[in-house]
Image (tube, rainbow, N blue to C red):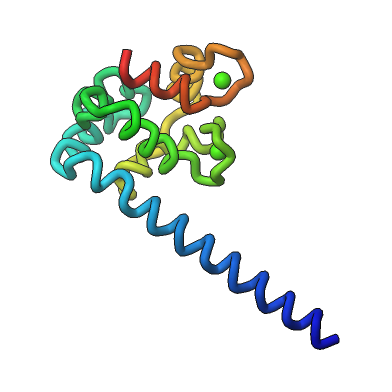
Length: 136
Ligand SMILES: [Ca+2]
Ligand SMILES: [Ca+2]
């Protein structure tokens, strides 16, 4: 009985620490890599539905000129559930990861991104595919 309770307490402690690490990592990612002005500028440019162009967006927010490692950090920030992939659901909230008040991407826009970068055809974006999309 005592042993069980001890284990339970330890598990709670661990998951709590995990959450803190995740939150810290997410908070630092985008703001420490990209300038707030550049992000604002990029979001403004695609305010109208279906006007999102990933190439232009990555250029305006400054991501295209970052290192592969920095692009990877941004990827991690967009990968909300830490699955190692950006799925369709996460892609919808793409702009909001850069600015919380930004709009959702439309179905057409998320499809356009997937069509452009999903090389292995699994319907989601891996980190390599994301780096190619941003840096090529
Ligand atoms: Ca994911
Ligand atoms: Ca893929």
